[in-house]
Image 1 (spheres, rainbow, N blue to C red):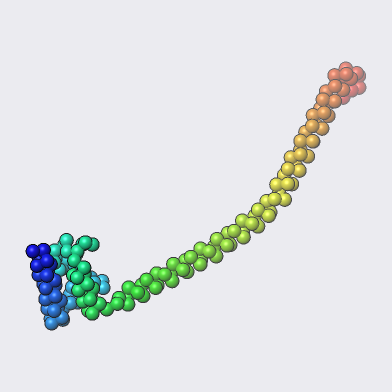
Image 2: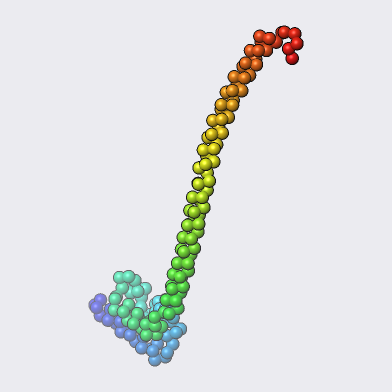
Length: 155
């Protein structure tokens, strides 16, 4: 019974394809580079379940065959894919160039930063030494003031 229904469906599709060929109106059923599946369902040629992944492979084969004959290999689609690939490659090359430029700039900045860091460390060390000397000097001054502050003429 199911084989009989499958054969009836195949025959309906073959008849529909032949009718499109005869009337030369297959362009009205075009959806991109394929036949609009909704039209096949609306006209009762096929059921939605027959177009699923698990549908009859013979139906798919017949449709693909007709689509290739009617619409051919989609040059537009191939061209758009080629254009998209070229754009992606250009963008990738631009990104690579930008990354190289940024890496080079980063290396230059790091090269500038290294001597600045060592100079900063040296200045910090010198600052610490000067603070210690100043602290010693202040404590000496305080001692002198304490010891000699009450002498006359000390100003």
